[in-house]
Length: 397
Ligand code: HEC
Image (cartoon, rainbow, N blue to C red; front, side, top):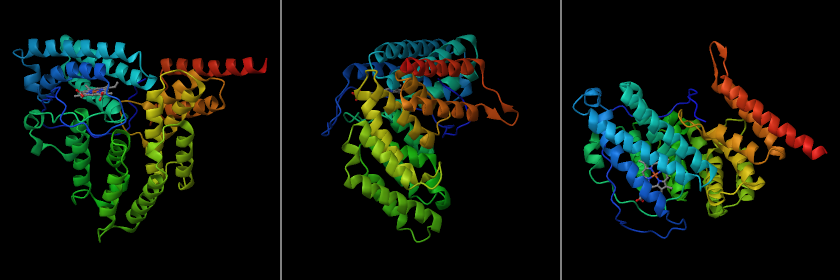
């Protein structure tokens, strides 16, 4: 389920990019995660047309010019076909992978059909949202090998004109995780980020997600935080936030938390996180929540089967998302809770997942004129309620 519910993310307004990634493997670091060659080859089919369309989409005139129309239409069609292909392939994978693949396919369809109808603005919007799906998937799975630098990509992107956060965005889209981390690190220590807000930035969470999920590395964030802490002009509350996170990293590193891949380990990390939080959305728990999510993401990816433990992993992932999510486009939290209920409606956490799901939708669809939950969401909630009630009554008999 995709909902536009007012969550904020970074957006890119400038520049244009050409993504070129060749099949040559530059360096293969010792990595535990297995390469997924069929997925890689679909990715190559996606990146080709996207490389040509994305730069044009940044410029109204080029995008709408009759001269470019046949080429754009052909590329958008190809993108849609490749996204359909990914969706078919995703049916054999875990539910989270399948969900994001579906979301990409929806956006690719919208981009194409709206372009064909002459709704250029809407088509561009869908193209830009498409890259949110690349990020959602890439930032939740381990790097399996170094993808060669996307040659030509950043020269066409006119890298100097891009905001560092946009740069990092495209590095993750093209799976250049080291470059993405370095870009974030330079940005956070550049002096151009107001020190008072550094700990509040969603981009700081994005940085932690790449470090933990893609790289399995808490050491880089540790060094970054030490660097920030060394600044003499650091306001007291930022110092205390950073010190909390540093201590969290030291604890998690000593427990080798990121080498774990089971639900019980994630539970433990989450409850440690909760212990240091004073109120529900207290960011002191961020490092623990990101780490728990990294363990759980790997767990669900390695367990495409549907059983109660996998269901619990989704429930816990939903909890981590409720603290960490800030993408306005892909709402993982609601997907996670819904999946937990569908996989194990009789489990004790199903009731809690339902409450949190209902709350999330209520918040998402509330505005100054009250709460307006759309009929399809109401029907979904009713269906899930029924699943839980039926499971409960079956248990009694
Ligand atoms: C549903 C999940 C998912 C989505 C959505 C997704 N990717 Fe990927 N992508 C992957 C995975 C997993 C890999 C790594 C496979 C491996 O390393 O074996 C990958 C690898 C890549 C690679 C490197 C391929 C290689 O040869 O190693 C590129 C480039 C890429 N993706 C681009 C994109 C772009 C651009 C988008 C968005 C339009 C996108 N991906 C969307 C899952 C996804």
